[in-house]
Figure 1 (cartoon, rainbow, N blue to C red):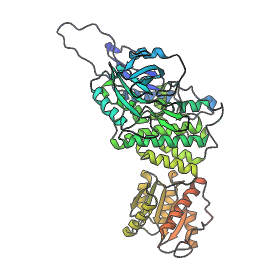
Figure 2 (cartoon, helix red, strand yellow):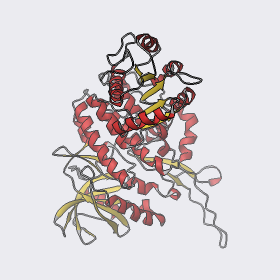
Figure 3 (cartoon, one colour):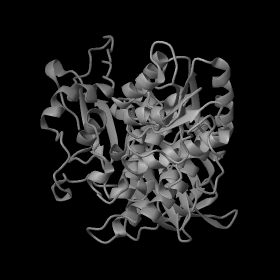
Figure 4 (cartoon, rainbow, N blue to C red):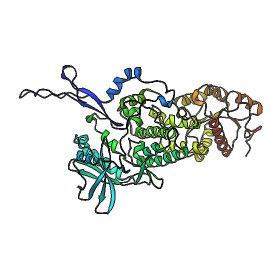
Length: 527
């Protein structure tokens, strides 16, 4: 869509192609310059400017409250056909002409094209026969106009090599890559089955997706994305139509790296991805450090989990631009809003995965996966443990002991209550262990201050002290402590108490009047 602004200057226009969002700069036609005149090419604004410019106004017409009922939801953007290798019986073979091919053509003297499997904003996926190895393959042919910049060729080669290095049972394998004429292509493993998109659509109208099956799909999808991240590659386009379900039940992640390739060249002024699953920083085309790149995929997996549990993604809108603005500006409703029977622990896990600030999301796909499986199996593992004690030797001893028992947990240590409160306010912890006697803010006051924070409501607080009994426990319990241990403590008992209090906090409200059986009346916790 082209337009002319004041004085004939270039106008930034937004085009939507299904959920593929392409925001590109176009300019109106002008009379040719007189001979000898210097040609001036105006610099097109960055696509992030589109979202930022909309931010003050889009909130005026965008719904800010969750819909009263699912029936009142806005229409959902149309999705493209499966982009990798699920068979779709429909007459779309004419789409091969858009990349200069027809059925029967041979790519790279090896791959004889049979028919189109799917089409999308980035190109065409075709079923082909590998005449050298006598096997069926899927070829993704990328629209040549998306590679209009010379630097794309080098990046394409580098990224394709990284993709080909990924070898995992839950990832569609990339066999080869190259160019057919001017058309870049990937040759991928052909997987017979259906997509997770089709699985979602196949359920009976008015019913929620099966929770056990949803967790099974997410478990395998996370394993596949973990393998992609381990190869220093970011997927950037995780969505139900890019997840394949084999007939035997195995989940395969497809289309890895394609969005990363297309997003790499800033001069193209293109934001590529799927609006329903795009992280806010991706929608704004913000620069990211290597340590945060993976968290775009974590956001997309959180959106995927939201949809697999409730039957709908976190944000819906009449246009892709509307959906993107919600990712940037609006807080999502908890998943249980749309599925009241969903255990509340899933709300916390998914909302953390789709936090606006990437620093507040899970640090890795593995941590997100473990949290989901622990919630589903009823065996929660702490992700972040805070130890507050003014004795550095004791902090070190208990910290090392807990690190051996919770190897995936981040364990932080501070020397007083002021540091502990600041650390928790910066980013909440799964469990807090506090010493009763500390300078400035002691354990009792720290417990009271922590419980005044909404983020602490599911965080067990375990108080440790050199002396105490039932009277001290009653006082601490009344202000929100979950357990009370007398030093010296046994690390096995601390582990057991952490697991018990985590289950209790996440199962429902803690009773403040009961004294847990593991609380010691004298000097040492029972074994």
